[in-house]
Length: 329
Image (tube, rainbow, N blue to C red):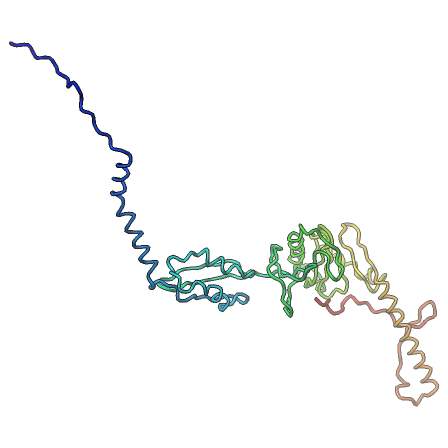
């Protein structure tokens, strides 16, 4: 038996050739090229096809954002490929209208863009030193009132120095002041407050949380803070007889303090009312004297009731003006 021969190794082992990174990339590209090229080719074909050109914008609009305005704003997009049209660009074109709230745009292939919009709701009219503005419930400005615009039943809120001499509020607190003023309005439940206190017509911001409010048929303003206004109005109604007994014509009533109510009489108006009453009493006295001298004169028999006051002067009593016509806004 012969011995096994020795194990022979090749003197120079054959080395495996490693594929270069460029080659591996080329193989990867060849493998996935159809998946990339076919969608791109389809996209270029669709985007260049007039079949999907935008031909119509359909919308219902709102009272302040009319369908005509929407169609005019989107007119530059007509003829553009509807599939490729970015909806963000549609929204940006419509945001030029300050009344625009929520917007929803949908593509209805092959050639219709449907647009639905919601209008921002005005909660009040803000009066500032640079004009009148509609504001929303958050106190943010919407748009300036155009000449001839009517605010309707919206409450007017004055903040900042204005032509009617309102005390300025901090500009940085404008939105907060509007929200507090609107909170005053919403807190006055018709079932809880006197009838003469509704509606809220005008709120002047005179401090961080101080407001001068004009209400319903009340002929004078009240000073309040934004909290607990309804209860303070009930207190005012309870004290009304005592107030009118002391001051029949009022300039304003301060209700900002818990255990104190400050009444400011309208001294000038009271003086004018007394002067008018004296003039009326004098005319009545002269008419009565003329009737005694000439009983057959027309109207000489008419009687005029007068009140004798301690000073001996004749005048008609001053009538309370708690219920005059509402303040013009």
